[in-house]
Image (cartoon, rainbow, N blue to C red; front, top):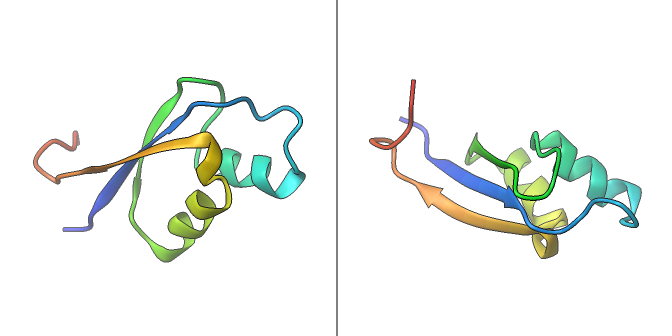
Length: 67
């Protein structure tokens, strides 16, 4: 099974460069405190690395994943 990461937005998107805000939105983050679980793929990791100063990142084991 694919590995997943849990990403939480901890800082506001307003005032950020467009590519940083777009990366956070591309991960599915909408507001401060919003958490999403995404697949640990190179494209998602690239978006996380772009906005790393605004995010809290945790790894998730597959047994905890819903669905």
